[in-house]
Length: 529
Image (cartoon, rainbow, N blue to C red; front, side, top):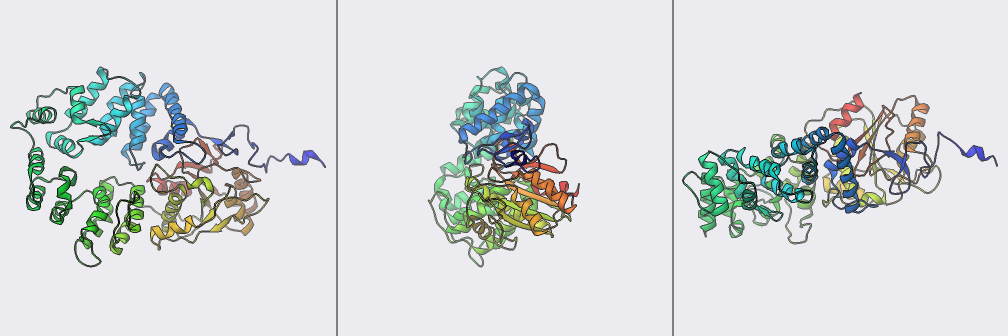
């Protein structure tokens, strides 16, 4: 046997390096390594809650903290700018990663001034501020700069906005506004702010205290539904500002709906509203609630992340809480409205006019939760593929894992999903597909074998590929050569690892963080060129 025949730079097993710049992923396959900026964007979008199939959440957190360390030293302003961008444009379903990163940056002398100045942009609610306070104590003490930044968070708001924050988000994560005000000692010449601080710290309601505080205090003393409903209408109280016993009263929820519930709060309260008989199949408040849920402008203003809509749809359609603490009979009109809300949450997406093969990695490692939420990476991938299917008239979806045999495509199958299906039904199709090893070259090999004309391959994966006899970037190159089509590859990373199958030296490939609300538009723009 001629051993030299085994050395092939155009077709290399994924268990071996095909390029000197490649690194070993957690599964033992060779892939490309993301630079720190790209890794940071993945972390901000996807977080590390739940870890990955191969890495614990702690190990993944340590890896991403190392990225923060390097960027804080090399590009502190770029680090803070990336954090602010990811947070303010709604890239992530949770703010925890952005607040953690900002707290870390605030502990590094080179990045601290910019990080502390950005606090109001990233910590936009009382809950965000409490999270930041908890994280920042992991890295530094309460020095003058930090106290001044927290004080500025309180004094930068007018009295009515501040009152809303202190009565809606009273305490979370082991912190309260009383704790932070005592630490920060904000000084102000505005009487209404001064009286609000006094009420929070000492319970004394001065003459200039905002009306919302008065309404909140009255609600705590009330004992009947009629009074609570009146206070909701008179003062604009949200459900978080009412005592628990008020939330069992239908009259109170009628008042809250009349006052206009925020979009996210409404989604979270759908099971409760259904249980109270307010969302029947016909009549009740069903029509107006459904209209609000699917209102694209409301979704945009409220910065509702598509992942949170997806979780709400899955949970509500299932008729039971993910924690098993409640059950209800879902109303079809509400389920349909949540479906519409999911697509609307991505904003307006224009078709690229390109031929797309959407390939969802359904291998075993994709069965882990994404962002610590009750949605797996394979389900989230399928949901993203549904958005692209709804956008691109010339697109098709396949699911793939891998095979231990050479040249076998048996582990790649067309995905029987469609935007015309309900989301929860479509995701059950994906869940039913068999698990297996990971071979991210299969979509390109399959397209070449079947004679498919593909302009853009979109692969949704955790990049833990290892089982193939050829690397994905080699398979892409071979497809281009065979067909004459300058096909592009978009890799949608579904976990916050530092790996990618996208060759960084290939201008026709793009790596993006999965479940960023901007993903469909990014794919479209890249496809157009």
